[in-house]
Amino acid sequence: MKLRSLVEPGDPERLATGFQFTEGPVWMPEGYLLFSDIPANRIYKWSEAGGIEVWREPTGQSNGLTLDRRNRLVACEHSNRRVSRIESDGTVVCLADRHEGGRLNSPNDVVVRSDGVIYFTDPPYGIEPEQKEQAFNGVYRITPGGEPEIVAEDFERPNGLAFSPDESVLYIDDSAHRHVRAFAVRPDGTLTKSRVLASMDHPQPGSPDGMKVDSKGHLYVAGATGVWVFEPDGTRLGVIVPPERPSNCAWGDEDRRTLYITAQASLYRIRVRVPGIPAGRVT
Image (cartoon, rainbow, N blue to C red; front, side, top):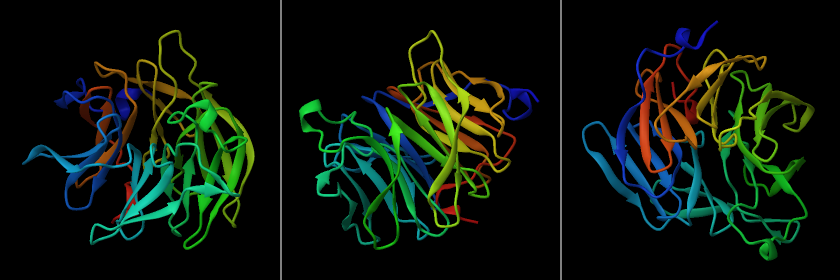
């Protein structure tokens, strides 16, 4: 299989630019995209009809965004060092900001399983070394109403993460090692059988960052030169190359066949042939 069997012909289309550093795109069921501008401390909204507007400010310098099973926005906040949820009335609820008495590092990216369990990565990108209160850079899960529990602590810089379509595998990339790891997910939600699925080492700048999975299990991972696309077994199919180095991506539009890409100062999109798995699992 080649990349052209998954991605429509043409280059990524720039939808908006002029931001400081874009991240965390998520498609909302109402038909618009939200994404973070971390240094600007904003979440922006983009829609076909309305273009760009500020959706929320301040945001705790939000990074990764996703939806829970009630389509509430879940955000990783760098400066607040927490994972939060925005309720339907706009109230912000802290879901996790400490582990075993110490503050989290700076939660980076987040995904929600179909049973409502939240998994997030916690590298130290948003803090100074002297602010670090955790002995590791971990991956955590939060059960509904529960405290954060560590599920992996042997990463140097855990970053993007995504489930396989059947949720039997959790993919997590390590930006420092420039590779993607795959874990088997036990029935109780803990992780086992870690293996390196794919190397993303490259002479150009850029490490693996945000990732998404389509309905047939292909991985789309932001990294050096573009969005790298892999088979579920780790075979690389090719790279989608926008004009700027990407940070993350998300499926959008009603058919889930548009890949929205956050990249440095801009937002892009490109059409694909296989639908993605949307945040919130809306059907």
